[in-house]
Image 1 (cartoon, rainbow, N blue to C red):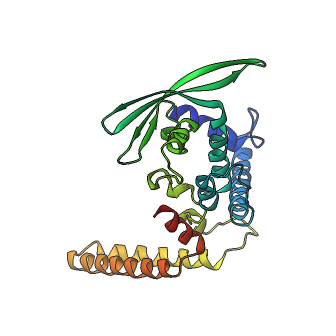
Image 2: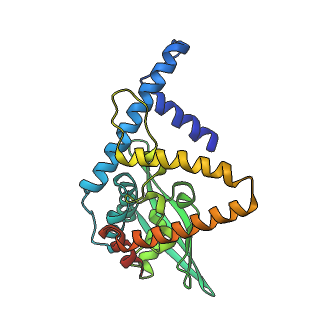
Image 3: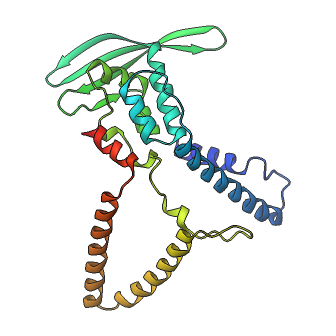
Length: 251
């Protein structure tokens, strides 16, 4: 699966830029253009996630929760699974201690006019609110499937438990690579990218000096740990309203 997905991702990255007749010189130039286009799309997606909002399709609180936290692309994935519950029905329930086993039938369309029922087993832990489905969508995509969501709602879960809200899908997460200075001609280097670049250069010099001596290493590590704690505390105090919403919803 990983090898296939990596190959498909690579093909999508170069789609429209290279072909079987592309020379090595042209490939280098087109790689630069493809990378530039990819970065521009990512910045546009980040902008849209903060300034545009896809409306909710249901009245479930968990949809509003994910709408306020996740990027637009990931919210649409979750919304598809949430609305897909209409095709699912609970066939049977079997309880054993704290774990309940649900058998769900989903109406799956195939071909032009065909439709069949496919059974899925969902296991729900009453104590931890953990849910696991035999379709393994969450394990592969990081988004809960419609079968698991159906069981959560059946058990009175109005919001997604915190262990199913991934930090990497949140729109307020700053990815480190966005701070790396870009060397394309004509591209503007932001103040944040310039500060990040200067810090990296200085930290490299400090690391070279501290690595040769145990005392220097200990002092630098202690200073960095204290600095991280102080800056993290200040960041939490001055955090955005989005982060506050996330914290309140998970309480």
